[in-house]
Length: 492
Ligand SMILES: NC(=O)c1ccc[n+]([C@@H]2O[C@H](COP(=O)([O-])OP(=O)(O)OC[C@H]3O[C@@H](n4cnc5c(N)ncnc54)[C@H](O)[C@@H]3O)[C@@H](O)[C@H]2O)c1
Ligand SMILES: O=C/C=C/C=C(\O)C(=O)O
Image (cartoon, rainbow, N blue to C red; front, side):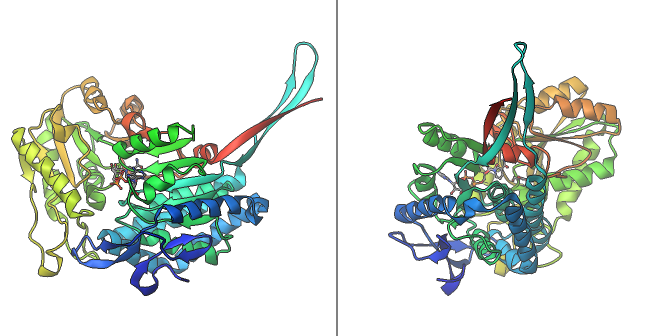
């Protein structure tokens, strides 16, 4: 099998070739916008996952191990160039798997994949090693220096919301640091991980360095991979529940883990904020990718004097969203990833009503054109009247929804925003930048924005605390996870 999608099937990629399945069957790949069958996917059984891990282990000891930093960073730049050349293929594959608008796939998902490869080529190419000239009281002197070695065979398990962005956010630094990887993309979004295999092979990556196994989680490829004794570490992005399970799985073998998990992110809006700019920012942070971004805002705290203005403004912006054909340039909002996920989000619509909330806008399933009627569509929704302890204000919904609650003092706003077991992201909206810095620093989150959202410098540490994850990736933080340093001490 020579290509990712031969015969209309999304194939596994093992040892440099698109592999036939072993014992497992095909599973459906559904287009979330229409509910139609977009294609079939070969599910990798345990034997194929084992072959993938062994291929990665063999590759680690093969020619790949003699590649220099310059060789690897050049490979990453060739991969970025090749994705650029095949840009529309990646966009089409991502839209087919997710139903997201072509504008988002183009401007965010695929653009960031290219940026990820280029950023980590720069970071690794410029990275130095720690060294110290040691002078002891007894007169002895030594040179201490650290050399970084690859972590080894890394299991990369990623979710369905930003498939290529999140995959390359991990694969780029892993390869830059000389590791080999076995990737398990979400069962909902297999295509771009397979297409990336073609690109990396075209860019000259040796066989076995990048492997893709498709399937589900428990009882399928995900579990086969994370429980495999041949992996040296796991980088996982997904739900908190799954992350916790995977952590228990690898704990027995004391393997390093990097977890980017769920969130229940707050926005704090002060009365002196630039109202239009803030509303435009919150429109993005609440409704981008149909709210299916771990960094999305689901809790909005507004200083009382402008509460009604913000609620009315958010409702107006929600009504302006265009739900429709993902391939149309005018569509702003796609469906949720699946009917099952929509059922979960609808459960929170019911919980909000039961809690006495007022649904200012949305709150149901929109009627769509016949061609889209089978999709997993949901109305962008804003709630007021929820209490801080109501489940729609505590649980991650992962849809285009937010609850809005008023506050009076800065101290109260910080307390409300930090009243969560998650700790991923927040945004603060104010014209007083001294207060912006102060409140942003007070947030117990990994990412704290002021007067903006999802503005990213890929050199900065990214990740969450509490139920939102373990560790950070990005810039030097990725080097620390994807390498094992050895400190050498030489007496002089
Ligand atoms: N913090 C972040 O950067 C970030 C980014 C994106 C999504 N997320 C979170 O991911 C969730 C949505 O994505 P999802 O539904 O794909 O998450 P998920 O946890 O259901 O699945 C994530 C990945 O793990 C695999 N998996 C599931 N069970 C497994 C198991 N037992 N062993 C091994 N692998 C297993 C899945 O097949 C998938 O590839 C949301 O909670 C969202 O907040 C977090
Ligand atoms: O859905 C979660 C989004 C994660 C984003 C990143 O990992 C990033 O911007 O690097």
